[in-house]
Length: 220
Image 1: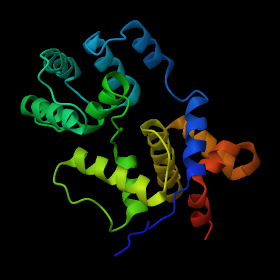
Image 2 (image 1 turned 135 degrees about the horizontal axis):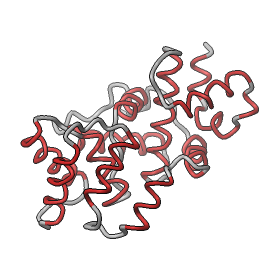
Image 3 (image 1 turned 135 degrees about the vertical axis):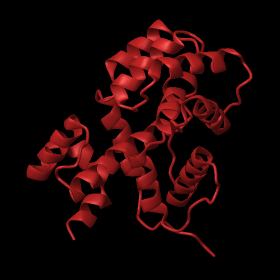
Image 4 (image 1 turned 90 degrees about the vertical axis):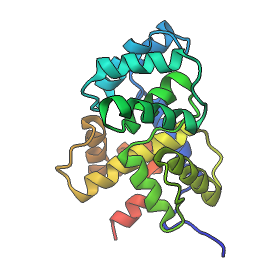
């Protein structure tokens, strides 16, 4: 049986997401951290603490988790690819009792391997929206997410890197959340952009291209 997307996604949207992200949405602090600590094993605790603060990943015992992350990455026995995130999450969970997928995947993406996708609730929500029933049944959350991303890329016929797709999923997820509830707690900067787009579509051309069919669905 030929599988198709439940909701469309185009190359134009992904390219717009890359332009949108490049227009200043990555925090300057992260860029400065990567410049100050360019190596995978450099400044791990500092990177972890700053990331948790900037991106609100809600790791309460962040100093403890940062130290454990440093220990695990420096011991040199960690896996690579999606298995790295699964391993770090599992080993941290043994100490904290919580599965910090958002924090670990963001740390991995920004400071270890940029090909590791960022997993958060918005990204999972959007991927599920596009794929519908055509989703992986892998029991491992991050691995399942990566398999679903690959499926989305293949079914949509996309030519993109991880960063472009991540940017699209984040912005589109926040937009759909905002559409459903204008009082939803989302990025204040994105909310301002959404409001400008609603009042004057011509004022946010890149954002309009990024959202594409999502806005058309919202107007039905």
